[in-house]
Length: 249
Image (cartoon, rainbow, N blue to C red; front, side, top):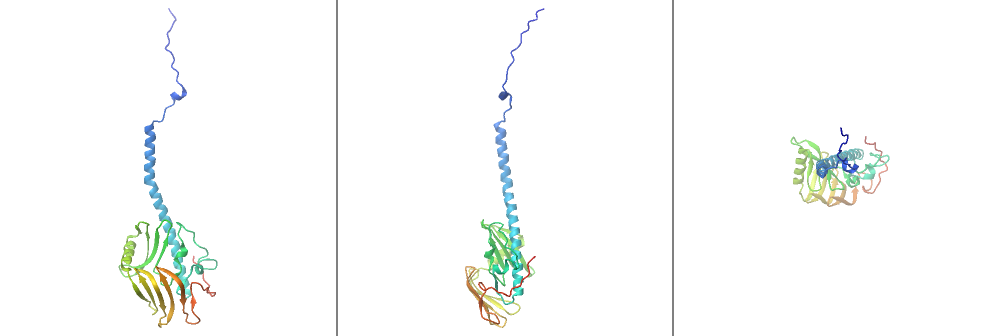
């Protein structure tokens, strides 16, 4: 019996040829999936970030409001409060708040005794607004809305409705008088719904309490105060050495 065998030649493969290649279709599909995830997740992440920033800003504004109310409670003759009178060692707020989105809290000041609206503007154009309004039962309520750079307004539905109504009613011009339960009154001149012109305050007996001037919603020049006793002084520049205020928790 013949022992000769014919063998088929052994085919040799290099390591590169044996390695399975990643098909380009799978790569393209992976890129599409990543893009879709980014399209879906990034806007939601940014919205969550904005919401967190606005929550912190509102918390800071509330602390300023609490501080202002306490200041006026302890200083019954004052019409305005400055930032340096409220923030710092020995003041109502021991230290300034750091910005969450490039906002400047100093721009809130001076805060007037009858503050009904305070707004903080972020670096990307959002305005976080605290305001007072009357609800359906005529009760005074506090509201917060955020107006985005393109005009979109966010917040609770009742608050958004109330603020839009306020905007519609406040397109006023000329002197407006606000009378208080104790008999004192404030006279503010408006232009297109914004304080512009003289502001005057009167004690319950009608005697002058103070005066200032607004230009496009901002105080310009001194804020003169006429105390019951003593000479007039500028509330924006005179430091009251008799201050003794507790800290806001």
